View 1 (tube, rainbow, N blue to C red):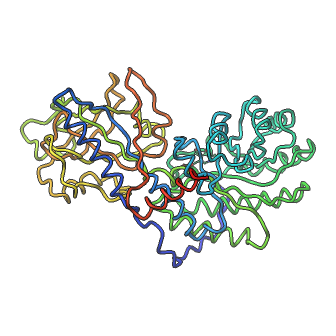
View 2: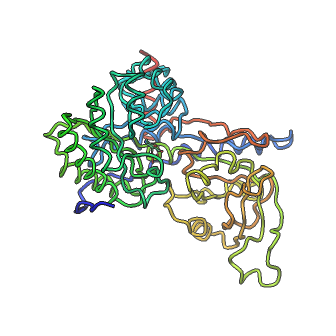
View 3: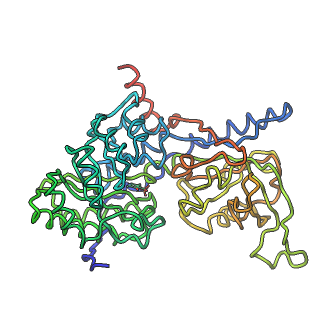
Length: 465
Ligand code: PLP
């Protein structure tokens, strides 16, 4: 690891960050659908799981970015992979966001939107692409693309010689949930020779990109990465390039965004002052969509836990007393537990077929606190909690959503459990293993909230064009 530059993070007066979005709309939608399903119980009610998605929360995230210390400098290129729902892409496009795509299917989806952006609002940010995808990008007019190795340069020379290339560099991602550096990014000591080769091939390299890892927990990683990028700008100058483009990738989370954006601003001011005219973009995924999606699941089965302690149950706090089986799991929307290293937090929507008190709703977004479920149940007055494990519906025992969590006693088969912060890396990687459908999405524009009215206005203005 190279020496990082000093980080002199100060708290700037950007108190508007992390203001909670109004959660009323999404909760109202969840309640409405759950109530409908419970009411039709007599006719054999539909217990299937569903997402409720609030476009107002996505609007709020975009505004939070734009009001942040980096908002007027760093352009948004939404990472489509994170949640490619057409409604999400459509709203983001209308809000002026550009897109980071990783495949032909992704840029085709973006360019086929009713609100399709021009192809120069797309970056093909996958450093190792099939040659056919590069040809497809050329045909679609998608010119900006990343590379991190010599073979990619030769491929691009053959398939899209006019591309605008961005060198993806390796940065420290050791404190991130998902370490992308294990797979991508040119180490600094290879960058000079890659740039020399690009020059020899007469390719147009315009700048540098990095990704500090998804779910970045350490702001020093951003400072270090910007510093590394500056080094590579120096190498480029020696190779005969005049870089004017920096892509700082993704990795942002709402909970820590105030701190992260402070550090990024400080590093940019230090190494890439605005007057030097370097265009800076970012590729956030999770930050823009995570809070917007809530998943509602119903309990389809219940058993006493196999190893439930009999005599001193009260004293034992380390094993579950009861096992709940729900109708979405690790092979479905909760694939984020395996692939995205998430800990998900349940809260009751109904208890014993009655709506749970509305106070039972978690803060929005919930803090990233592994004790959250305990805090919630205690704080919400569920004195009588049960230690539970929660399982998905498939026949595989890997399909465990939580191995130990606190839920109020009295939750039964047919009751509903909610899960917040489910918008990122969930739906997009869900399978239908064992014949269980993917959970469908029900949308709200945000209802009669400030954000809701603004989203409606944006969508209406587009429809009236
Ligand atoms: N950009 C690239 C190249 C990525 O691979 C990813 C995630 O894997 C992202 C952006 C989005 O990252 P995040 O959702 O952490 O913001």
